[in-house]
Length: 116
Image (cartoon, rainbow, N blue to C red; front, side, top):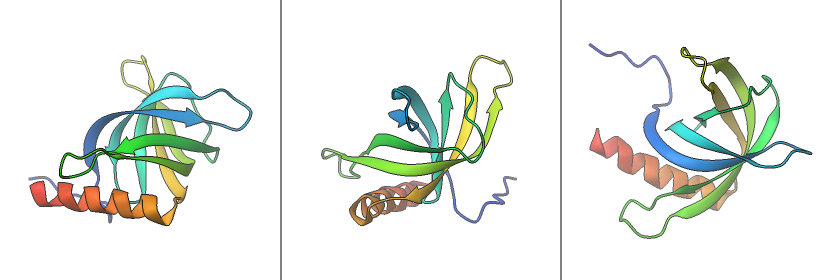
């Protein structure tokens, strides 16, 4: 039996994204999980806990229409090397998200919750 301890459900995705830390060039990352509170990404670089960054990604529209590009200000909540030591797993908490972007994310996550 699976027991979800989290208050906010997470959903598995596989989306490309761009991560930008102040005074550094954007890097390509992959979003592995998403929730209303944040995202889990994989990337080549280890990010320091507490570091702030901007992540840009496209949230698909539930009806298959063009998605919405979102840029979210995030804070690194956790970061660790993967078990096979090939990449870093990073948990990012949303700290700033435009209302229209938050709405698009909420609509998509509500759609995912109905599929469960």
